[in-house]
Image (cartoon, rainbow, N blue to C red; front, side):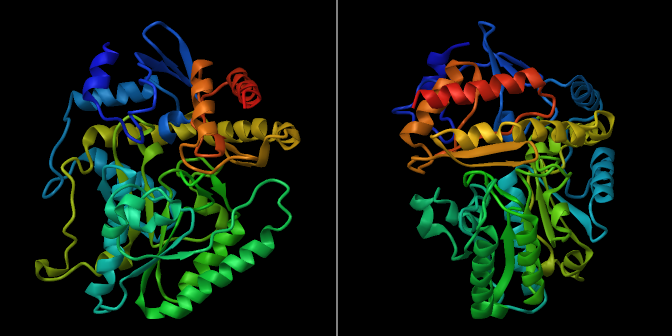
Length: 432
């Protein structure tokens, strides 16, 4: 494996190649561990960008992938269908509220959001309501890297070079909370008042409100309460606008329930899922919507149809792995594993509260996060880069988001591996 060739030929994501070190080669992976060619183990404590929910190289998923590859690897999805896609749609629908029954396949989280935005926009046009062209998103939200997703994620601060090509979005204030946060109800009320002002101002010009339920992921693992999500959703309903939940990061058990929105007892018009959908094996996503939305696209001619698609839509290999992954939730009692991880995280909260460099420690399901008390906040701040490199040098894949340090491990992680992670975090903090 030639790192020289990598450095000469490959452009890595979210990487400043002039200053950052060469990438670490990974030869194989198993469970919660990555292994270099020399055999050095690195605990994958962020599940390879939040995708590997059951762990790497899971035998059941390996077998499902190989079995499907021996039957059919791909077929175009316009004018054709296949059993893995049909069965996956059935199984997803069975897990979701009865209103969410129409599944549109695409290939990653950004496109799942892009599909939802385009569907919401066209829905109103197909209904003859031409004025509903605005979107409302929350400050701090990240929804992906395609143009529409960047537009509604402008509040994350990632996209300043692209502001001139993004469409206008109204940003509402977003309260976030942590353990021992005694002012959250007041901040939630202020945020809801801000959302109401925007809805009152733009009223019948708004197509949809988009939300990351309970956790704003790439924005810094900013956690919210189900009470706020429920109130914001009910307000959207009051003003008659569509509701998009982006659960690309938090779907499939991350917050302790199969889907985060379950904790608020509300149902969106669009649900965006990816990452954990195929347990990190294959690129795939879905945007699930209602029969009411679907019917607005039906007509005698092509004018109202949704003209959007991807070459690898509903790829059979990805569908087969996703199906097997859903089965593993029951077979391996995955949500109980998440509860065990959450309990282990919460047992460390007192130590985090007591640490002089730690601010706002917080836990939601399998996610543990805190902020550096004197952090600069930039995505690639000096301290976050130093910590990332120290963690990697000590066998831990922990990748801070600016001044937010977090763990989001695969559900197969052992108690011993979690202890290594906690010890590594405290040791890493001492280097600052």
